[in-house]
Length: 373
Ligand SMILES: Nc1ncnc2c1ncn2[C@@H]1O[C@H](COP(=O)(O)OP(=O)(O)O)[C@@H](O)[C@H]1O
Ligand SMILES: [Mg+2]
Image 1 (tube, rainbow, N blue to C red):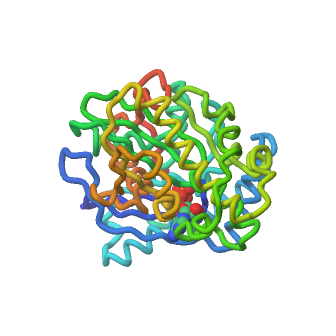
Image 2: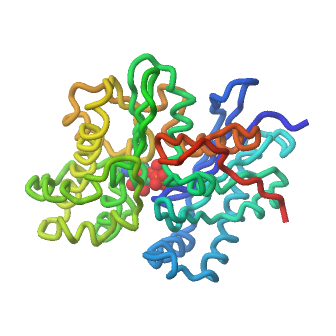
Image 3: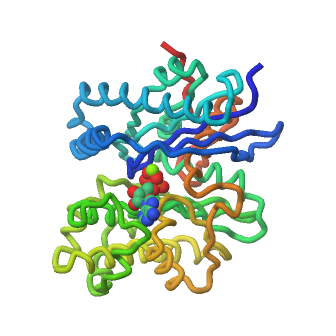
């Protein structure tokens, strides 16, 4: 008999690598119990291919089906390898795994219209011989939703009953929040950039994929006069539900608002502060006016950027800022844990979108079961 272990796989908008989480479920309880996780960095060549594909995807019509299909297969194989890797690491057998929930790699996301993830599920199912569930956005889009964000479902399961209002904040390439708690109908949306803008500049001028521990930002100066103007960008004035991507928070965005900053170190500091500022601004405009919030629980790679977190603490002095690790959700793996949960609920046919967050007309079961080819 297959056991109740579930594997969740994800690669976020930063496409730094595949996050793998192994979780367990108790009977009649949807709260995932984290068992173990690994992060498998993408090979350099694959990273470049993903970057190229995303860059060409300004419009869905620009995406080359041949290139998509080739990378879809390569990523399917890589995702399968990572699942096999964690099974081996834990001394488990494939029979111990109930299913794999795989988000894949987003290469295109246009809210309400189309969201494309690659990392072929049939290949994962075939290579691992484990039932694989993917395509977690389409059903919500069909129900009139944005197909994003998906995290509120995990947040609702884990924090929906807490007496005090809580914000969860995931800082990946893009930053997204969920407001939840006992008396709160969950709200969630992308606040704007997470690490996306910072990563763009470190790669361009500092030959590094990201600002490790926020050390570059720490040494530069924040040039405040550019912050206010950039915060007037139309995205920040759209009321939630809303979602965005690196197609929007890209080099052109930096050029539009920050091109006059001469010193590259100051540019990093300013973008880091801007990222923190847009999170605070969005929370004040769309959450704090309606709900009393006592804590912000952070997850995602941005938690490692100490300068970013210290800016957040400085501009939100009255709120307790913690990490999701405190709640049994290791910050590095929270998204992978989500996809384990979404796969599990799909298999059990439990509705797993949150209409108040995605804008969908109704609750629906997201995810598709892939049969190995
Ligand atoms: N030690 C670190 N210091 C600063 N930033 C970091 C560190 N580790 C990871 N990051 C940031 O986190 C990003 C990856 O975070 P992740 O949660 O995986 O995002 P995504 O879901 O978009 O892939 C990296 O691109 C980088 O910007
Ligand atoms: Mg990542």
